[in-house]
Length: 156
Image (cartoon, rainbow, N blue to C red):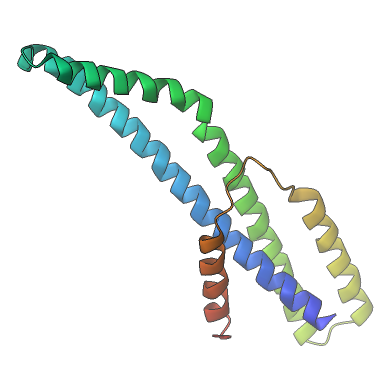
């Protein structure tokens, strides 16, 4: 039981870190897309007055702005960010639950109570963390988060 709780605690912390990083990354991407779109749109309008003789500039800026404006609702970054943030919050709560359980185990609490609580947390994990094929999976970031957890727990 000790190993299962320890491994579950590490797994929850790694997942919390991973989904936090991913969520922040997508939030930054959304901000950059909006900033890009604002600049391109403004650049297109500005090019009418200043670069009238260079017709290709405003055509490229206008076309690029249109493509970005069309793609953004299809990608639906706000929905992805919301989903990833919710997953991150759920993993954070699971991380806390496992840490409390780990402390109970270290303080020699009743073994039957610990097993019951572990099963409850595991069931909660199964119910609340549903894999979504549309969400990103970044193996390099997973490894980075895993290494951060090992360092944080003094295992590396």
